[in-house]
Amino acid sequence: MAKKKEKSGSKRKRRKKANSKPKKASRKNVKSLKKKNPAVKNSGKLSKSPFVKKDRDNVQTDSPILMQSPRGMHDILPGEQAYWNQIRRSLDHAFLEYGFQRIDTSILEYTDLFVRSIGKGTDIIDKEMYSFVTKGRDKVSLRPEFTASIARAYIQHGMNVLPKPIKLFSTGTVYRYDRPQEGRYREHRQANFDILGEQDPVLDAQLIQLASRVIEGLGIKNIQFQINSIGCSKCREEYLELLKSYFESKKRKLCHNCKKRLETNPLRILDCKEDKCVQVSAGAPQSIDHLCDECRSHFKYLLEYLDELEVPYMINPRLVRGLNYYTKTVFEIWSSEEGRKHSLGGGGRYDKLIETLGGESTPAIGFALGLDRLVMEMKKTKVKLYKEMKPKVFLAQLGELAKKKSLRLFSDLEKSGILTAESFGRGSLRSQLRTANRLGVEIALIIGQKEALDETVIVKNMSSGAQETVTREKLVNLIKKNLKNNNVVSVKPKKTR
Image 1 (tube, helix red, strand yellow):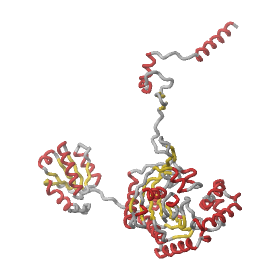
Image 2 (cartoon, one colour):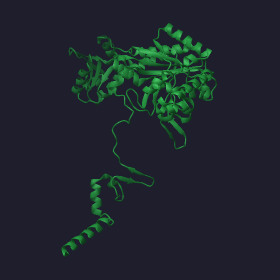
Image 3 (cartoon, one colour):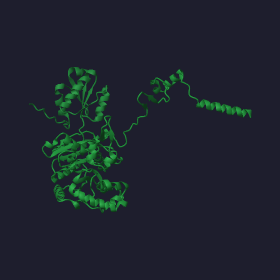
Image 4 (cartoon, helix red, strand yellow):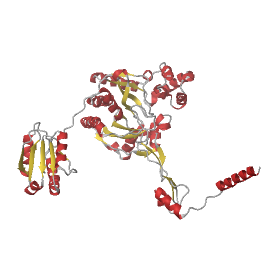
């Protein structure tokens, strides 16, 4: 019995020790901790956790950095740039040939701009914007699309006094907090074409022709334009009443989101991709059957222009687009490779948007292309990419003086239109010539200590191995003469006054 009491007593002592406050760390213990943990080493006192840094205002934790981009964001690596260069080339040719001027708007805008222009009840406003409050208490958002920013810039900078129509081209990133999926990212790239100041349907047809020109210029075939007219504010009011009445009778069959849309924006139900909503929408009243005379005439002429241009299109009565500012013409560009349909872009008229934002009445039309979608489609269809010109001349150097002279020579060759490769960071001549072999150049230019002093260059034929020494003055003409394919970039002479 005595032994049991002793054991229980020792247990109580151990519990007291465990529950008692820890003693202050000795200097020896602090020194050992500082050696093991740099976080403790930098702090004046030993903190409760060695991974917590304290300052007067806040507490920061040293969490590991994730070596990946945030979800829905992605990098465009050098290996993919050939696709993007082809898109940039096609866009640059198109906007200049069709008489557009480039405009670059701010990525960040006041949130109210998008709320008023895009409209409540749309997916973008309800759940897809990156919005926050700045230190100055301004409510701002990353742009989810370009059109509202274009309209704001038009009003702010007094573009209404410019000759009409005003044609604007813009490109850049847009941000939507949407569910990432194939071809859709939270940060994605768009190209926008807008025509402001005219309401003639011939401009609708010209924009559609322009979109076709850009996409086909990338090598993407089998595209089709889905087209509809959703009317103007006059005839749409009556149509919305009919639409709402129809969906009210089918309310039980609608999805949860569409039941909400029935009260806020019944037109958006037609755009729902849920199977049960698609089936219900199939029997809904069609907007083209309820157009006023003006809208009907506008749509009729548009279709006649498209027939004249031989642009492939299909009237899609369920096409409404997801933004409230659209009027009359709406369209999307679909690719139907391998039986699957992908939307590559779309747009429509927004005749009342600028007036809604406080400007004067200005009819307008525009469309956007999803550049990430275009790259995805180019990869799927295995389009033939434009081959960039490769250098056929390599400049090698040996020694500090030769390196200085090579910098000047490289600049002179570039100004003469001769595409030249180099490897200035490499010290060994052998390693530089290995790089030249790997690049497949025809001519290697070598400058050593002697050549740097004599203002000469050794010209080596990489195929035969033959080489000769020439002066700097004769070098450019000799290279142009010896290159097999005359791989010289044309250089326009400077204009003299």
